Image 1 (cartoon, helix red, strand yellow):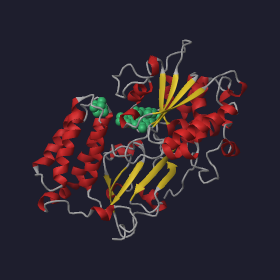
Image 2 (cartoon, protein in one colour; image 1 turned 30 degrees about the horizontal axis):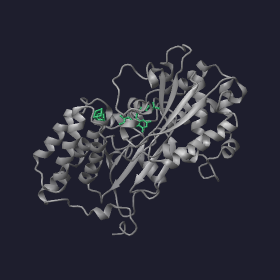
Image 3 (cartoon, helix red, strand yellow; image 1 turned 90 degrees about the horizontal axis):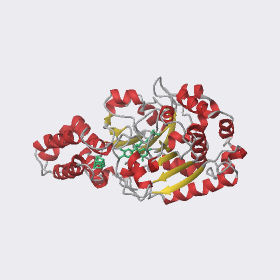
Image 4 (cartoon, protein in one colour; image 1 turned 45 degrees about the horizontal axis):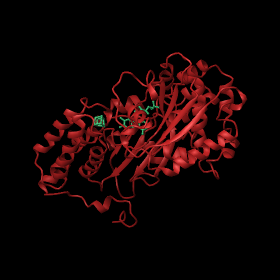
Length: 435
Ligand SMILES: Cc1cc2nc3c(=O)[nH]c(=O)nc-3n(C[C@H](O)[C@H](O)[C@H](O)COP(=O)(O)O)c2cc1C
Ligand code: SF4
């Protein structure tokens, strides 16, 4: 049983003032940058390719390969954009990472800019997390004062500047091309691809867009070597990652572990589900990944195994729900989120998510009919694969998977004239759990 955690990014979150430059340097921080400055850019890209690092923002695209798509330098600007929008229900790894150890991200940004020959990076932070925005601004200034960021990084003659940008709070601005439109000052809506950002991204210039955790993982690869990273995880899902356990679990939080660990192992370390209750369903990677049940406790949490079992690794946001939870109510809440966050650009998602909410509401209230289940599946079928971006696809995941595993529970709402669950029993408010 793999009870071993692999704390790298979270190694000293419990140190006093873990977020300061002093603490970071005391723990070996910025040594990787010095190593990277002695390397050719191509060698940095090769190391990240060899490590097998795959994007930690959800889709798992190989990071080094993405960097290698940039065209040859033409003397004009090229950019790194860090996606720190983190807005999906359940997903909560980048915010704690940036709060606890922002210099991992900053060191990763500078190394990545050296690798892709960019002189300016942007960090697009979710609008609501003002505390993260302030922490990053402070950390960039600390790094600038020490020469890690600026016109002449550590006297190397190479310049890297970092702009921290706050969004206005929209889930769609986490989609990489909507993010770029938003960063340019426009309303955030996905762009038609191609051209891909690598060719024409921010200000129509070659751009790499990567997740916070992807970029923050780069210093450890340069410092410890590609082989070290590739030696963790599974054959095709290499390395470590933050697994965020939330909901009905006794010790919720971030568990940094090799990819391929199982929920059973993570739950062992997290003290299990609430006392007196059993696991009912869970998301392996946030609300846009199809639900799993207790039958999937031993599914290795890597890209391939989660896909083979009918879901996705996503952002490793493990939302745990015990037997007090009404699955219809949970799915309704997620669907309300998707309907609210749909940007409106394409018809299947704009109209479909609205109707999904209407049908789910009447089912939850016991006012629907059995045909409504077919209607839900039909609407999902018209959204999935027919929407302009992955938000529409994601909106269908909780619905189709919950009907697959919990059809009987939907029917109970009809036969019992309403929701058979007491919503208070599933809350985590003091006293409620004891009921
Ligand atoms: C609706 C939607 C929201 C997204 N939100 C995020 C986000 O908050 N953070 C993130 O890194 N990627 C998000 N993504 C994925 C990005 O489009 C992109 O794939 C990712 O930033 C690439 O980084 P990576 O290769 O390092 O994973 C989102 C995608 C969609 C469709
Ligand atoms: S799928 Fe939804 S969020 Fe994406 S472009 Fe269409 S309307 Fe906008």
